[in-house]
Length: 421
Image (cartoon, rainbow, N blue to C red; front, top):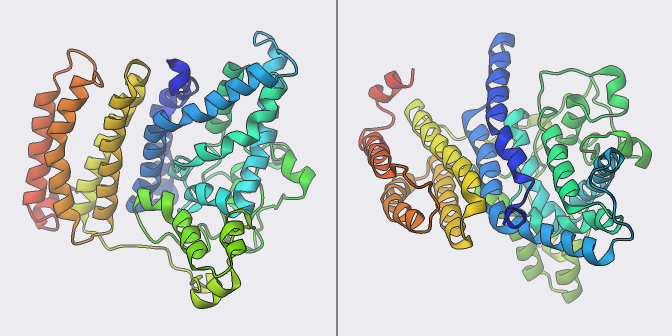
């Protein structure tokens, strides 16, 4: 059962409190230095993508784990000893080598970029950006780690070093740490990873390593952060949305539309595997994509009153707690229960995204979300998704009444402004 839901996921679960503690410390550093590296909507959008990725991963990551386990059992040239320290050290370096190529192809080919683009859509760069993860990586990323299975790295070792590699990458997503001298010749640092998240032409498609930057130096993809070229974060075709579902689908939809519009059947097929950004000539001419001029670049922003910001932050906190509980319960429950939980998460984060965009439908979607909580909770209890003995109905009643009171009041009124200050 643990393998089904992903043994490495516990490492991420245990790290969640530390993630938010470090984010709080980074916000304190912002205040102390008089800078602003966070915007509420952007941070919630990044965190929403991460929450969605963790929730849906309970249903999807089994594919990669299963393929790896089968390859290890059927194709391994050796059976390395999981109790030997050298095997763990080798696996840690080997994983990062495979990650480099996975990451590099994720930038260089359309269908792989469609998954990875989620991580780069934020126009800010802070620790919340590190948690902005794709929900569709399970489709193809497993391919790049099969050499580890063939070389005989046991599945448990593979899952553990994969989690450690991911956890290492968290701290490099900050603007508060400068260049680190000799360290940057070997390891990925905040400076050389800031380069990786840039949309400046001089920086694009560089610095792919997860832990070790030596792969980029060896294979010609390294670029140092330049004092004379301040980094502009984001992607050249902006997401322009706070919707985490759309963030995961945007580039797939663009590829599908371009394939459907192409006159040539060869173009319809090859567009998926062409270099990132390639489009059929007839489609590009008829449907050009607007790319902002970096000289006059402006970050995506939707005006949102202080009351609405306060309301959405409180609602998002509920989903963080809910998904944390979902991760804790996952090894003991059925797929049906996990699907109920994932549906609750996906709709809730969608509604939060609509709220952040200040769309006319936001309030109606919020009322619907609150009304759905009761039947979803009943289903979750029937399927054993929640711990036995937990008094959830009073909690739901209190939460629903508080949320309904917030919706009933004018979110932009002075009452909300005073409350949130």
